Length: 278
Image (cartoon, rainbow, N blue to C red):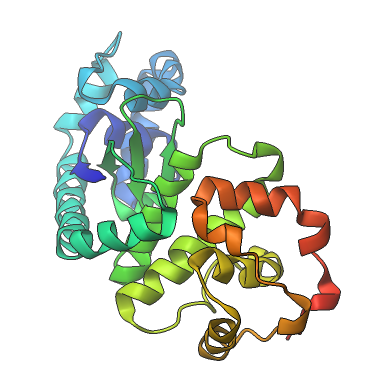
């Protein structure tokens, strides 16, 4: 797996034009452009799809508005701040990439071989967008809280990449798939990297579902009955071990196979009576 952090002027300009303004100068530029080039402005409304699809090869049919944006002082300022954000993301990835790749391969049990292109946006645009069918695997990225916690930001990026890789696998069971990826990345990968349990973190709307899947996820990781107790105490996620026969075959499947197991057996697995919910 490789990640390239890049910027794209057209994509940055598009998001500035069509996302909510985060400063007065940007808003003034948008109002001026709409007043003077209203029809041309609105023709760009869906052009982000083409930019994401072709990135460096993108050529607009009409670059009038883009050129005005590029020449503006506010764009030049935002572009510099976006470049600083790109360097920040690149630094935290480069610092941790070796360990992440090693641990991620162990958790997924398959290797992500492609290069992903993170097209960095200004963090105040607060955006994550991608097209799963895009062969270039471009992801538009700029989150307002990226700078708050480096590890959280990295886990969010890896979560997005793994979700991209899983694609439409078991798409009729999307919540189960999301919960398993959250267990794998936000919880297990982050726990390995920080050497501190992170199993209380993750998407709040998936909390109950993740707790139902948790014992089986430990079995997927290879835990025997004694290790189940140790993990349960470490992660502070109690469950009645006697109700969970160890599914040893889970040690031999990859994440796709584990997803299939959970989806195929969800009527048995998703029982609230098995849980001690707090």
